[in-house]
Length: 204
Image (tube, rainbow, N blue to C red; front, side, top):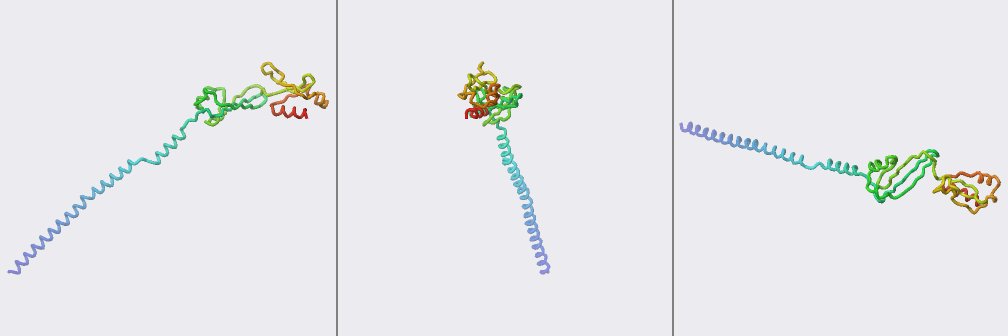
């Protein structure tokens, strides 16, 4: 009888211990499950913060684009090149100048609007090249002829009403007969370089 009671008592203790262990196990796993969502939230919050970070590559692209969008303008140091193309003799004459005051700060579009009869070949803050076609002959033609027995140079087109440009020191009669005839008939020359070369040949 005594052993039976003792056995029942031991069984009761064992049952109590099992219940306590079960409660401890339940509480342990419950705490793990409760903490798990918190970890997930932390991860989500972290990912949101990453999304809020500035996109460096996008910012760089914007800066590069803004550099390419810079509009070039004429400055006081810009070289202005005027090209005159004479269609009748296919000659191009260039004149280089500093920009006049009214061109300063002009953009290419503004220049095109102001000079609609010109072609803008090159436009930058360093150099602007403008070309104009003229349906005429270049004005840089000279005629080598005779004046008072000496070789003389005439403008083919009078300049300010004057045809004679200069009289040289070379007498015509010192030249061979065929050259004298050429000069008396007039020799047409284009440009300063060719004129100087021919005059030097005659004076040598």
